[in-house]
Image 1 (cartoon, helix red, strand yellow):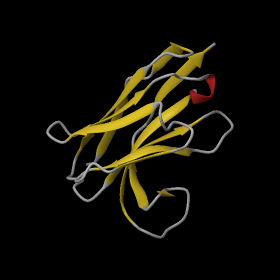
Image 2: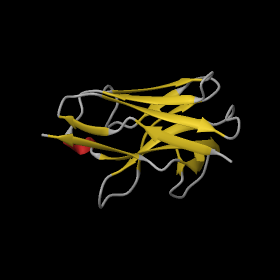
Image 3: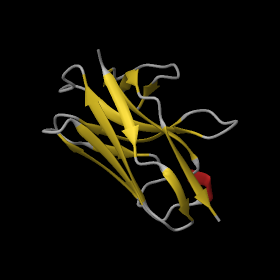
Image 4: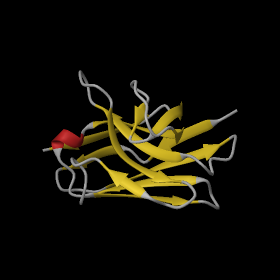
Length: 129
């Protein structure tokens, strides 16, 4: 059974930092991308960043580019999202997901060349001013 379990969320002040973690288990994800998404109250879920499991290629949403770093530890089956210079608009539930490559797709679970099949439950990030 595939499991993605996020941790590391919390309450932080504007300008602060958080490191989110995602523990993956239940299958190998060698051809997959591991993505971070977020959903704020009353808003649609949005892409934050992804990293390919095999090559470590990364991609970021413009809203977090330059302030966030996604990384992985293959030995531990862990994916991380380091977020710095946090803003109130970063407040959301952050979800980890695993996606298989689908270059051309659509729907709410497709993003930037990957169809996300597995999702974690999410971890809350709240940035206070």
